[in-house]
Image (cartoon, rainbow over all chains, first blue to last red; front, top):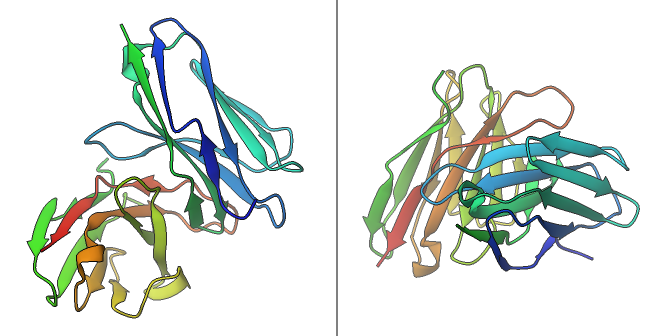
Length: 110
Length: 114
């Protein structure tokens, strides 16, 4: 993998469903992995910065895991709510230079 | 505590013109990075400023230049605008620490080149 890739590109779920997205990144020369949530007409909001293989981070109903050896991270949302509707971006970071994926757009229907 | 602010919010220019975008970092932050987000893509790194100098640069032509002021605010200048420069320009700030820092983003400036 040469670039940061995210899947799926978009996702539609019902309120209460749990969901997860994937971020794939180059495992060689890994330094850090960032997750952002970006709601329409707002600034991207930082969710997590992860650096260690096996790292797991949690913020409310959102959690993320990191596998630096195989080059992937998962973002989980438990019990999705309409306010979780946003684009979720991951980025491979190295001393401030972020290489972003194209994002996963989540739509949660009430 | 004001977050990252950017001005203007929207801008329309014609091909060949020059544009200046402005960014004020989050209070206490000393590093500013600029990103370009074209439609349907993730943000792309343009460059980063620290201590008033360009610290890192992405794959953008010399038409893209910047500046950081003593108060840590920053400007992005684009000369000889192309239609392809139409995009959302995001500014992000952080506090330099020698380890991976969280970057805080502004709302962006949407540039349309006609």
